[in-house]
Image 1: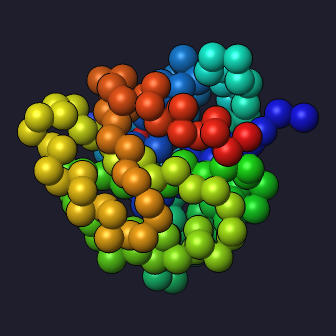
Image 2: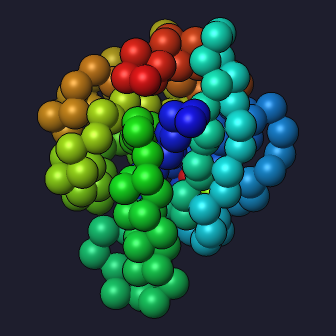
Image 3: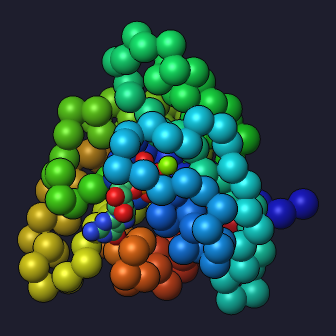
Length: 164
Ligand code: GDP
Ligand code: MG
């Protein structure tokens, strides 16, 4: 059966935007309000000769006791457990946050291959210096993308399909 790729990360980093861009359709709801995606959402994606199932998740707020946010975290954990490869999304505009480190810890515990994707790099010359700080997550090489401007997606997908 087809490999499953899950998009995870804190709310508002651009997971649903990336999901929609890769799906080629607006399936998932993109909103400025964090945590709008509450259910897992699926799309079939093709890249070169590869076909895979992409899962969007509502986002992970590691320490939240809020009922909805903790349910979202549980849904994300199910997506992580189901996935063959995880796209771990972070936001270059906000920079490295404590919550990113906690998500990284969750992902390490999963023992799944993780591709670190640094989103909102709409201008590579301007934002590349800020991308390197994400090496501190200990997840490996950060892949800069702009989900909304469709930049960097080829290099990122090349890295994802290496793990199939
Ligand atoms: P999610 O909560 O992680 O699913 O994030 P969303 O996809 O809903 O996006 C949150 C906000 O970030 C929205 O206002 C998006 O328009 C914005 N956003 C997403 N991707 C990009 C990007 O590549 N560049 C910029 N500048 N904004 C983005
Ligand atoms: Mg979303």
